[in-house]
Image (cartoon, rainbow, N blue to C red; front, side, top):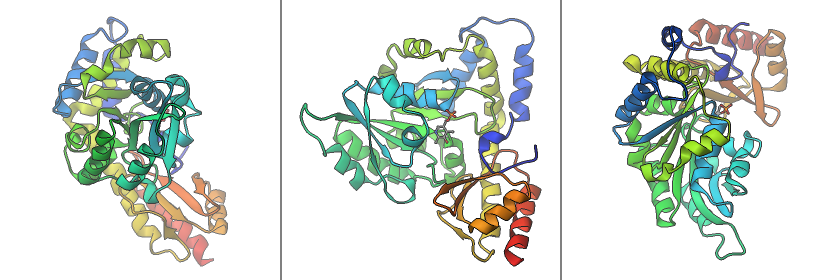
Length: 343
Ligand SMILES: *Cc1c(COP(=O)(O)O)cnc(C)c1O
């Protein structure tokens, strides 16, 4: 299939990660993560974050989010999140299920970014044993609308959380894209900004499988390994996941992949701005472009074989770029759209 803009998961595994998997595939190694490569991957992720953190690997992002949230919640707790967050809209109730009943409380603030005021309002909405008790603030970086929280924005949010005794979880399925855009250190938008637990995404960045969970406060990860095992998320051939992570970490391939995907989104957005009838819905700050495209132009694009999602009403389209999106793919999409708009 040709390159598409439907999702960054339409791309494959990047060559550097694949090479490491092939190398790790030769010979035998101890299972369940008790091997040298997994140990090295954990140490290098801790070094990347400049933190004495606890690192775990699970198969996918839904498990990373649901299990880490469950770890921070009692069944009677609540998790504060954005209305347009993956945990609210795309995980089939996994956070509620794995936490044994914790409720998601959401706010629909602009650009898919929570505000300190919205968090304050949700954190103080309920009081007493007849209601759920908020325990976690969950932030998505980059957001589901392809926007990014700056370090000071995160700090303002996590300050409110801490004031109300909430732990802070970050869904970082596209954390790499946020780091690339902000030009900051990974620590600047995680623990240094008040994040307690980060789900650090590798799959959309160029892996086949294996998301990483980073506990910056080690005490919070108490007995977490049992939670992973019970949920069927402990990989017996872990070395093949951790080896791929080493391929992303070598020479900061993860950052290069994210920079490239972001640059392709910028290229796409720049072209879309000049097409009559098409308008950007949100600033392009990661690897997603959200644009209003009239239904007849969408139809023309789909007839030419393009695949993408229309998420927001009839015109709100999401165009995702990946680590391997070629400039020529972007340019061809723009040419096809321009042609349809001019006919
Ligand atoms: C893709 C994604 C995930 C993880 O999804 P899985 O399909 O379960 O791996 C989590 N959060 C966000 C914001 C995502 O885009």
